[in-house]
Each structure stands twice: as C-alpha cells, then as structure tokens.
Length: 94
Image 1 (cartoon, rainbow, N blue to C red):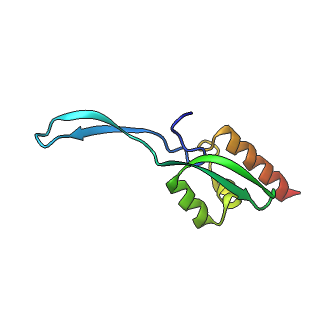
Image 2 (tube, rainbow, N blue to C red):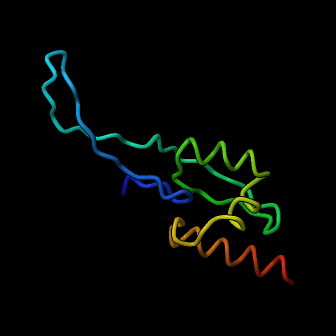
Image 3 (cartoon, rainbow, N blue to C red):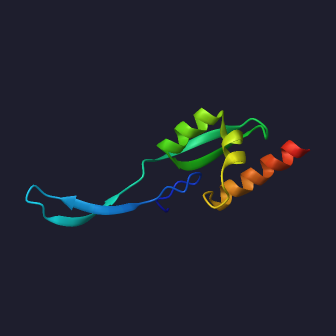
C-alpha cells in the first residue's frame, strides 16, 4: 500500500534532520493518512478511501465527498477516486 492520499495526491516528502551541532542527515516526512469511509449523497452509497487528514478537512469545508470530487483535478485523484468522480458526474447530468 503506497503512502499517498487517494484524493489530494499528497505523498512522502524528504528533507534534512538537523542536529544540535548542525549535522544534516536525510529524513522522510510521511503524510498523516487515515482509512475513512465517506458517503456519497448523489450515489447513495459509501466508499472507503485512504486519505490525508488535511484532505478530510477540505472535504468537510467544501460540503461533502461529491462537491470535493467534482472540483478536484483528475491528476491528483487515484484510479478508484476517478471512477467515483465519473459516476457522480454521470448521476448529476442524468
């Protein structure tokens, strides 16, 4: 399982750990990933995603999973999230 948010695309970053004596060694910054179940109001069913905590706050701010996915760029989304987005757009247009 990759360490990448399925909705926002946030992944692992690298940087330096700096000691008191200013010695720099490489380190990894991991995203705060959570396994969550989100409900789609348009489709009437729930979906399980592995997303970052920051993406979860953004979903709440935008008004739910449907509004988030409609506004999200396709390059950031995983294949599963893209499929859900296409289903939501098809249901909205019908």
